[in-house]
Length: 400
Image 1 (cartoon, one colour):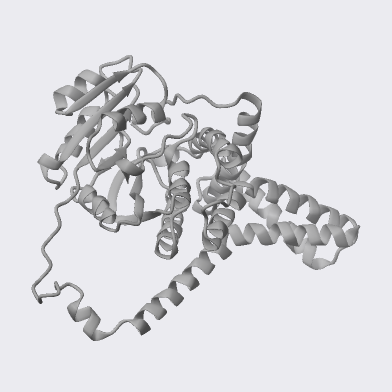
Image 2 (cartoon, helix red, strand yellow; image 1 turned 180 degrees about the vertical axis):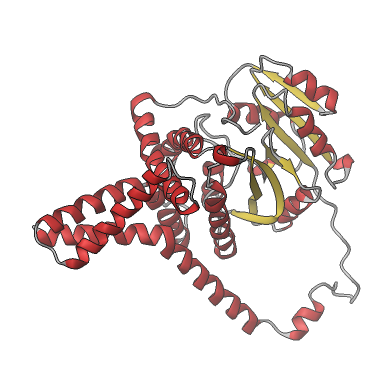
Protein backbone atom coordinates (compact mmCIF):
# COMPACT_ATOMS: atom_id res chain seq x y z
CA UNK A 1 0.00 0.00 0.00
CA UNK A 2 2.81 2.40 0.89
CA UNK A 3 4.55 1.69 -2.41
CA UNK A 4 1.34 2.44 -4.30
CA UNK A 5 1.01 5.78 -2.50
CA UNK A 6 4.63 6.64 -3.27
CA UNK A 7 4.14 5.83 -6.96
CA UNK A 8 0.94 7.91 -7.05
CA UNK A 9 2.70 10.83 -5.39
CA UNK A 10 5.65 10.89 -7.77
CA UNK A 11 3.42 10.40 -10.82
CA UNK A 12 1.14 13.32 -9.94
CA UNK A 13 3.99 15.53 -8.72
CA UNK A 14 5.93 14.79 -11.89
CA UNK A 15 2.96 15.79 -14.08
CA UNK A 16 2.61 19.06 -12.15
CA UNK A 17 6.29 19.87 -12.57
CA UNK A 18 6.13 18.95 -16.25
CA UNK A 19 3.14 21.16 -17.11
CA UNK A 20 4.32 24.10 -14.99
CA UNK A 21 8.05 24.07 -15.77
CA UNK A 22 9.36 21.03 -17.65
CA UNK A 23 7.26 21.73 -20.73
CA UNK A 24 8.69 25.24 -20.98
CA UNK A 25 12.23 23.91 -20.73
CA UNK A 26 11.54 21.28 -23.40
CA UNK A 27 10.15 23.96 -25.76
CA UNK A 28 13.17 26.18 -25.16
CA UNK A 29 15.61 23.34 -25.87
CA UNK A 30 13.68 22.36 -29.01
CA UNK A 31 13.70 25.97 -30.25
CA UNK A 32 17.45 26.24 -29.62
CA UNK A 33 18.03 23.02 -31.57
CA UNK A 34 15.88 24.32 -34.43
CA UNK A 35 17.80 27.61 -34.50
CA UNK A 36 21.13 25.77 -34.57
CA UNK A 37 19.92 23.59 -37.45
CA UNK A 38 18.75 26.65 -39.35
CA UNK A 39 22.11 28.39 -38.92
CA UNK A 40 23.95 25.36 -40.25
CA UNK A 41 21.72 25.15 -43.30
CA UNK A 42 21.86 28.87 -44.07
CA UNK A 43 24.61 30.30 -46.27
CA UNK A 44 25.95 33.87 -46.63
CA UNK A 45 24.90 33.86 -50.28
CA UNK A 46 21.35 32.91 -49.29
CA UNK A 47 21.16 35.82 -46.86
CA UNK A 48 22.51 38.25 -49.44
CA UNK A 49 20.09 37.31 -52.21
CA UNK A 50 16.84 36.19 -50.61
CA UNK A 51 15.27 39.69 -50.86
CA UNK A 52 16.01 40.00 -54.58
CA UNK A 53 13.83 39.11 -57.51
CA UNK A 54 15.22 36.64 -60.08
CA UNK A 55 16.21 39.60 -62.28
CA UNK A 56 18.35 41.05 -59.50
CA UNK A 57 16.17 43.99 -58.41
CA UNK A 58 14.65 44.46 -54.98
CA UNK A 59 11.27 42.77 -54.46
CA UNK A 60 8.35 45.19 -54.64
CA UNK A 61 6.30 45.58 -51.46
CA UNK A 62 3.01 43.71 -51.38
CA UNK A 63 -0.30 45.49 -50.94
CA UNK A 64 -1.52 44.93 -47.38
CA UNK A 65 -4.77 42.96 -47.11
CA UNK A 66 -8.09 44.64 -46.44
CA UNK A 67 -9.17 44.29 -42.81
CA UNK A 68 -12.40 44.52 -40.86
CA UNK A 69 -11.63 45.25 -37.21
CA UNK A 70 -14.54 43.85 -35.20
CA UNK A 71 -15.42 44.86 -31.65
CA UNK A 72 -18.21 42.89 -29.96
CA UNK A 73 -19.65 45.04 -27.18
CA UNK A 74 -22.28 44.72 -24.48
CA UNK A 75 -23.03 47.95 -22.60
CA UNK A 76 -19.65 49.54 -23.28
CA UNK A 77 -20.66 53.21 -23.61
CA UNK A 78 -17.91 54.21 -21.15
CA UNK A 79 -15.08 52.98 -23.39
CA UNK A 80 -16.38 52.36 -26.91
CA UNK A 81 -15.61 55.87 -28.25
CA UNK A 82 -11.99 55.55 -27.11
CA UNK A 83 -11.78 52.12 -28.69
CA UNK A 84 -13.12 53.30 -32.06
CA UNK A 85 -10.79 56.32 -32.01
CA UNK A 86 -7.87 54.02 -31.24
CA UNK A 87 -8.81 51.76 -34.16
CA UNK A 88 -9.16 54.65 -36.62
CA UNK A 89 -5.74 56.01 -35.59
CA UNK A 90 -3.92 52.78 -36.46
CA UNK A 91 -1.08 53.01 -38.98
CA UNK A 92 -2.97 51.17 -41.69
CA UNK A 93 -4.29 52.39 -45.06
CA UNK A 94 -7.71 53.86 -44.32
CA UNK A 95 -9.07 52.61 -47.64
CA UNK A 96 -8.29 49.03 -46.52
CA UNK A 97 -9.68 49.24 -42.98
CA UNK A 98 -13.21 49.30 -41.67
CA UNK A 99 -14.29 49.28 -38.03
CA UNK A 100 -17.38 47.24 -37.14
CA UNK A 101 -18.95 47.47 -33.69
CA UNK A 102 -21.36 44.61 -32.99
CA UNK A 103 -23.64 45.62 -30.12
CA UNK A 104 -24.84 42.52 -28.31
CA UNK A 105 -28.17 43.49 -26.81
CA UNK A 106 -26.87 46.80 -25.46
CA UNK A 107 -29.18 48.64 -23.07
CA UNK A 108 -27.07 51.82 -22.93
CA UNK A 109 -25.65 54.30 -25.49
CA UNK A 110 -22.93 52.03 -26.90
CA UNK A 111 -24.28 52.09 -30.46
CA UNK A 112 -24.75 55.86 -30.55
CA UNK A 113 -21.29 56.48 -29.07
CA UNK A 114 -19.71 54.13 -31.63
CA UNK A 115 -21.39 55.94 -34.53
CA UNK A 116 -20.35 59.35 -33.24
CA UNK A 117 -16.77 58.11 -32.90
CA UNK A 118 -16.68 57.11 -36.57
CA UNK A 119 -17.27 53.35 -36.75
CA UNK A 120 -18.13 52.40 -40.35
CA UNK A 121 -20.67 49.79 -39.32
CA UNK A 122 -22.60 49.53 -36.06
CA UNK A 123 -24.77 46.44 -35.70
CA UNK A 124 -27.54 46.54 -33.11
CA UNK A 125 -28.23 42.90 -32.34
CA UNK A 126 -30.45 40.96 -29.97
CA UNK A 127 -28.56 39.55 -26.99
CA UNK A 128 -26.97 36.34 -28.17
CA UNK A 129 -23.48 36.46 -26.71
CA UNK A 130 -20.06 37.57 -27.89
CA UNK A 131 -19.54 34.77 -30.42
CA UNK A 132 -22.84 35.33 -32.21
CA UNK A 133 -22.15 39.09 -32.33
CA UNK A 134 -18.77 38.36 -33.91
CA UNK A 135 -20.39 35.93 -36.36
CA UNK A 136 -22.85 38.63 -37.44
CA UNK A 137 -20.02 41.12 -37.99
CA UNK A 138 -18.00 38.63 -40.04
CA UNK A 139 -21.08 38.00 -42.20
CA UNK A 140 -21.29 41.75 -42.91
CA UNK A 141 -17.57 42.05 -43.69
CA UNK A 142 -16.11 41.77 -47.18
CA UNK A 143 -12.47 42.18 -46.13
CA UNK A 144 -9.74 39.60 -46.62
CA UNK A 145 -8.83 39.59 -42.92
CA UNK A 146 -11.19 39.85 -39.94
CA UNK A 147 -9.47 41.11 -36.80
CA UNK A 148 -11.02 41.13 -33.33
CA UNK A 149 -10.55 43.14 -30.18
CA UNK A 150 -12.28 43.92 -26.89
CA UNK A 151 -13.87 47.28 -26.17
CA UNK A 152 -11.40 47.98 -23.35
CA UNK A 153 -8.27 46.99 -25.30
CA UNK A 154 -6.12 49.69 -26.90
CA UNK A 155 -3.74 48.78 -29.74
CA UNK A 156 -0.36 50.28 -30.45
CA UNK A 157 -0.32 52.28 -33.73
CA UNK A 158 1.59 49.60 -35.66
CA UNK A 159 -0.24 46.61 -34.14
CA UNK A 160 -2.62 45.92 -37.02
CA UNK A 161 0.13 46.25 -39.63
CA UNK A 162 2.25 43.71 -37.76
CA UNK A 163 -0.68 41.37 -37.17
CA UNK A 164 -1.79 41.47 -40.82
CA UNK A 165 1.78 40.81 -42.00
CA UNK A 166 1.57 37.30 -40.53
CA UNK A 167 -0.87 36.38 -43.29
CA UNK A 168 1.76 36.91 -46.00
CA UNK A 169 2.51 33.26 -45.22
CA UNK A 170 -0.32 31.32 -46.92
CA UNK A 171 -0.05 28.59 -44.30
CA UNK A 172 -1.18 30.97 -41.52
CA UNK A 173 -4.88 30.93 -40.73
CA UNK A 174 -4.87 32.64 -37.33
CA UNK A 175 -2.60 35.16 -35.63
CA UNK A 176 -2.79 36.72 -32.19
CA UNK A 177 -0.78 39.59 -30.78
CA UNK A 178 0.49 40.32 -27.31
CA UNK A 179 -1.74 41.94 -24.71
CA UNK A 180 -0.02 43.67 -21.81
CA UNK A 181 -2.02 44.03 -18.61
CA UNK A 182 -1.61 46.98 -16.30
CA UNK A 183 -2.99 47.58 -12.84
CA UNK A 184 -6.14 49.69 -12.67
CA UNK A 185 -5.66 50.33 -8.94
CA UNK A 186 -2.84 50.77 -6.45
CA UNK A 187 -2.15 49.82 -2.86
CA UNK A 188 -3.83 46.87 -1.14
CA UNK A 189 -6.58 46.80 -3.75
CA UNK A 190 -4.06 45.94 -6.49
CA UNK A 191 -3.09 42.46 -5.31
CA UNK A 192 -3.55 40.59 -8.59
CA UNK A 193 -0.40 38.81 -9.80
CA UNK A 194 -1.78 37.99 -13.26
CA UNK A 195 1.03 39.97 -14.89
CA UNK A 196 3.64 37.48 -13.69
CA UNK A 197 1.69 34.51 -15.02
CA UNK A 198 0.87 36.27 -18.27
CA UNK A 199 4.51 37.08 -19.07
CA UNK A 200 5.36 33.39 -18.60
CA UNK A 201 2.39 32.39 -20.75
CA UNK A 202 3.49 34.75 -23.53
CA UNK A 203 6.98 33.24 -23.47
CA UNK A 204 5.48 29.76 -23.90
CA UNK A 205 3.27 31.03 -26.70
CA UNK A 206 6.29 32.44 -28.52
CA UNK A 207 8.10 29.11 -28.34
CA UNK A 208 5.03 27.16 -29.49
CA UNK A 209 4.63 29.50 -32.45
CA UNK A 210 8.27 29.06 -33.52
CA UNK A 211 8.03 25.28 -33.38
CA UNK A 212 4.50 24.61 -34.61
CA UNK A 213 1.32 26.48 -33.66
CA UNK A 214 0.02 28.10 -30.49
CA UNK A 215 -2.51 26.23 -28.35
CA UNK A 216 -4.55 29.30 -27.33
CA UNK A 217 -4.94 32.97 -28.21
CA UNK A 218 -6.42 35.98 -26.44
CA UNK A 219 -9.46 38.14 -27.02
CA UNK A 220 -7.70 41.50 -27.00
CA UNK A 221 -5.88 41.24 -30.35
CA UNK A 222 -6.21 38.47 -32.92
CA UNK A 223 -7.17 37.93 -36.55
CA UNK A 224 -8.03 35.26 -39.08
CA UNK A 225 -8.62 35.08 -42.80
CA UNK A 226 -12.31 35.61 -43.47
CA UNK A 227 -12.21 32.54 -45.71
CA UNK A 228 -10.85 30.50 -42.78
CA UNK A 229 -13.20 31.84 -40.10
CA UNK A 230 -14.66 29.03 -37.99
CA UNK A 231 -18.19 29.28 -36.59
CA UNK A 232 -18.16 27.67 -33.16
CA UNK A 233 -20.73 26.93 -30.47
CA UNK A 234 -21.69 30.28 -28.86
CA UNK A 235 -20.57 29.11 -25.40
CA UNK A 236 -17.11 28.25 -26.72
CA UNK A 237 -14.91 31.33 -27.11
CA UNK A 238 -12.48 32.01 -29.94
CA UNK A 239 -9.43 32.21 -27.63
CA UNK A 240 -9.24 28.45 -27.20
CA UNK A 241 -11.37 27.17 -30.10
CA UNK A 242 -9.80 28.86 -33.10
CA UNK A 243 -6.12 27.86 -32.78
CA UNK A 244 -6.61 24.11 -32.61
CA UNK A 245 -9.38 24.21 -35.21
CA UNK A 246 -7.01 25.99 -37.60
CA UNK A 247 -4.42 23.26 -37.06
CA UNK A 248 -7.05 20.60 -37.78
CA UNK A 249 -7.67 22.36 -41.12
CA UNK A 250 -4.00 22.22 -42.06
CA UNK A 251 -3.25 25.86 -41.17
CA UNK A 252 -0.94 27.44 -38.62
CA UNK A 253 -1.97 29.51 -35.62
CA UNK A 254 0.86 31.92 -34.79
CA UNK A 255 1.82 34.45 -32.13
CA UNK A 256 2.98 37.93 -33.20
CA UNK A 257 4.63 39.45 -30.10
CA UNK A 258 5.30 42.82 -31.75
CA UNK A 259 1.56 43.39 -32.32
CA UNK A 260 0.85 45.01 -28.96
CA UNK A 261 -2.36 45.81 -27.13
CA UNK A 262 -2.98 46.83 -23.54
CA UNK A 263 -5.86 46.61 -21.10
CA UNK A 264 -6.59 46.88 -17.42
CA UNK A 265 -6.36 43.72 -15.37
CA UNK A 266 -8.80 42.78 -12.63
CA UNK A 267 -7.43 44.59 -9.54
CA UNK A 268 -7.66 41.84 -6.91
CA UNK A 269 -6.70 38.19 -6.69
CA UNK A 270 -10.27 37.37 -5.62
CA UNK A 271 -11.58 39.13 -8.73
CA UNK A 272 -9.06 37.32 -10.94
CA UNK A 273 -10.07 33.98 -9.43
CA UNK A 274 -13.73 34.74 -10.16
CA UNK A 275 -12.84 35.72 -13.74
CA UNK A 276 -10.89 32.51 -14.30
CA UNK A 277 -13.71 30.47 -12.77
CA UNK A 278 -16.16 31.95 -15.32
CA UNK A 279 -13.67 31.42 -18.15
CA UNK A 280 -13.02 27.83 -17.14
CA UNK A 281 -16.71 26.94 -17.21
CA UNK A 282 -16.53 27.75 -20.95
CA UNK A 283 -13.09 26.17 -21.33
CA UNK A 284 -14.16 22.78 -20.00
CA UNK A 285 -16.98 22.75 -22.55
CA UNK A 286 -14.38 23.20 -25.31
CA UNK A 287 -12.00 20.61 -23.88
CA UNK A 288 -14.57 17.90 -23.22
CA UNK A 289 -17.02 18.35 -26.09
CA UNK A 290 -15.54 20.95 -28.42
CA UNK A 291 -13.10 18.73 -30.29
CA UNK A 292 -9.83 19.70 -28.60
CA UNK A 293 -9.15 16.18 -27.34
CA UNK A 294 -9.59 14.58 -30.75
CA UNK A 295 -6.11 14.15 -32.28
CA UNK A 296 -7.49 14.13 -35.83
CA UNK A 297 -5.52 16.69 -37.85
CA UNK A 298 -2.80 17.19 -35.21
CA UNK A 299 0.87 16.46 -35.72
CA UNK A 300 2.50 14.40 -32.94
CA UNK A 301 4.27 17.53 -31.69
CA UNK A 302 1.06 19.53 -31.52
CA UNK A 303 -0.61 16.63 -29.70
CA UNK A 304 2.10 16.90 -27.05
CA UNK A 305 1.57 20.67 -26.83
CA UNK A 306 -2.19 20.28 -26.30
CA UNK A 307 -1.60 17.59 -23.67
CA UNK A 308 1.13 19.52 -21.83
CA UNK A 309 -0.06 23.12 -22.04
CA UNK A 310 -3.82 22.62 -22.01
CA UNK A 311 -5.11 19.33 -20.64
CA UNK A 312 -2.52 18.82 -17.90
CA UNK A 313 -2.62 22.53 -16.97
CA UNK A 314 -6.38 22.40 -16.58
CA UNK A 315 -6.11 19.21 -14.52
CA UNK A 316 -3.59 20.79 -12.12
CA UNK A 317 -6.01 21.17 -9.16
CA UNK A 318 -6.85 17.47 -9.29
CA UNK A 319 -3.16 16.56 -9.60
CA UNK A 320 -2.35 18.72 -6.57
CA UNK A 321 -5.14 17.11 -4.53
CA UNK A 322 -3.95 13.62 -5.48
CA UNK A 323 -0.31 14.47 -4.72
CA UNK A 324 -1.17 15.85 -1.28
CA UNK A 325 -3.41 12.89 -0.41
CA UNK A 326 -0.80 10.36 -1.57
CA UNK A 327 1.94 12.20 0.32
CA UNK A 328 -0.09 12.22 3.53
CA UNK A 329 -0.89 8.53 3.14
CA UNK A 330 2.76 7.64 2.44
CA UNK A 331 3.90 9.49 5.59
CA UNK A 332 1.17 7.84 7.64
CA UNK A 333 2.30 4.44 6.36
CA UNK A 334 5.89 5.06 7.46
CA UNK A 335 7.59 6.55 4.40
CA UNK A 336 11.01 8.10 4.99
CA UNK A 337 12.24 11.68 5.54
CA UNK A 338 12.00 12.54 1.84
CA UNK A 339 8.21 12.33 2.05
CA UNK A 340 8.16 14.49 5.14
CA UNK A 341 10.11 17.09 3.17
CA UNK A 342 7.76 16.96 0.17
CA UNK A 343 4.77 17.21 2.50
CA UNK A 344 6.33 20.24 4.19
CA UNK A 345 6.78 21.93 0.78
CA UNK A 346 3.13 21.42 -0.11
CA UNK A 347 1.91 22.65 3.27
CA UNK A 348 4.24 25.66 3.05
CA UNK A 349 2.64 26.64 -0.26
CA UNK A 350 -0.81 26.48 1.31
CA UNK A 351 0.42 28.38 4.36
CA UNK A 352 1.95 31.14 2.24
CA UNK A 353 -1.29 31.42 0.28
CA UNK A 354 -3.24 31.82 3.52
CA UNK A 355 -0.74 34.43 4.68
CA UNK A 356 -1.33 36.33 1.46
CA UNK A 357 -4.89 37.06 2.59
CA UNK A 358 -3.60 39.33 5.35
CA UNK A 359 -0.03 40.25 4.42
CA UNK A 360 0.62 41.90 1.02
CA UNK A 361 4.14 40.49 0.65
CA UNK A 362 5.03 39.55 -2.94
CA UNK A 363 5.90 35.91 -2.23
CA UNK A 364 2.72 35.40 -0.24
CA UNK A 365 0.65 37.13 -2.93
CA UNK A 366 2.16 34.91 -5.62
CA UNK A 367 1.35 31.81 -3.56
CA UNK A 368 -2.19 33.05 -2.98
CA UNK A 369 -2.60 33.82 -6.69
CA UNK A 370 -1.37 30.35 -7.66
CA UNK A 371 -3.58 28.48 -5.18
CA UNK A 372 -6.63 30.64 -5.87
CA UNK A 373 -6.45 30.50 -9.66
CA UNK A 374 -5.59 26.78 -9.63
CA UNK A 375 -8.68 26.12 -7.52
CA UNK A 376 -10.68 28.20 -10.04
CA UNK A 377 -9.92 25.59 -12.72
CA UNK A 378 -11.77 22.94 -10.71
CA UNK A 379 -14.54 25.30 -9.65
CA UNK A 380 -15.18 26.15 -13.29
CA UNK A 381 -15.61 22.46 -14.09
CA UNK A 382 -18.05 22.11 -11.20
CA UNK A 383 -20.06 25.09 -12.46
CA UNK A 384 -20.22 23.68 -15.98
CA UNK A 385 -21.29 20.21 -14.82
CA UNK A 386 -23.87 21.61 -12.39
CA UNK A 387 -25.38 24.50 -14.32
CA UNK A 388 -23.91 24.57 -17.81
CA UNK A 389 -22.86 27.95 -19.24
CA UNK A 390 -24.60 30.70 -21.16
CA UNK A 391 -23.35 32.45 -24.28
CA UNK A 392 -23.79 35.94 -22.78
CA UNK A 393 -21.05 37.78 -20.93
CA UNK A 394 -20.40 40.86 -18.81
CA UNK A 395 -17.26 42.92 -18.24
CA UNK A 396 -14.94 41.66 -15.50
CA UNK A 397 -14.79 43.70 -12.33
CA UNK A 398 -12.50 46.74 -12.46
CA UNK A 399 -11.40 46.39 -16.08
CA UNK A 400 -13.15 49.44 -17.56
